[in-house]
Length: 115
Length: 113
Image (cartoon, rainbow over all chains, first blue to last red; front, side, top):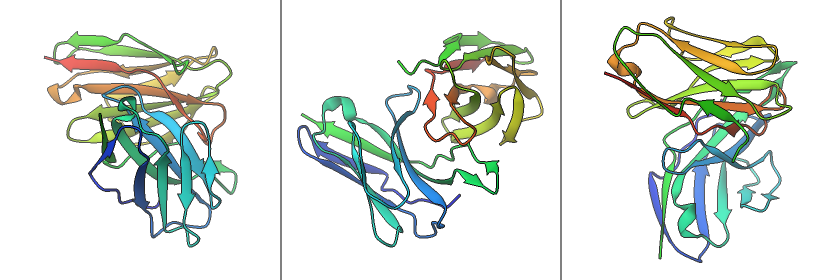
């Protein structure tokens, strides 16, 4: 799986958008970008994933650059409950009939949302 | 609530002992994954089972073993425990083998004294 680079920490004011960057300059054409978060030692929580198009769901938006070498997770209206470690993971899902279900977690970005 | 159930939530045991951690996946999910999270190593993939068969192994010690039963629940067995095995152990499940969207349990916190 391609390696990712994330800032160790970020701050955001409550109610504002939180934009979390991720660099994955060595991403391959068949690798997806996934985002998970972990709130204070709870189990990681899936947020969103994408291949090359921008994606949006009820939790967040994922913007992937045209060259796919970087992406941004956007939490449109951050709340105190969004304070967590956010992990950007780049991974293959299926290649030649072989599945790659495991997730390789890096250090992530500690997002702190302030009142 | 992710729908993945892990028991027990907390476990304290002595060095040299053996413990079993249990995971019940979400209804309909055929894949179960085990992860270990320690302070110095972060979240590490241990092993993946799909419909009862082992699919992938990560950094799992030989003292550790796992299995997935016909009812799809899984157990992670840790033996000859050492102080360094103290960690959070998470189980995750997904519908297919690719883990497109994996759902994690709340973990078992193991403390070896």
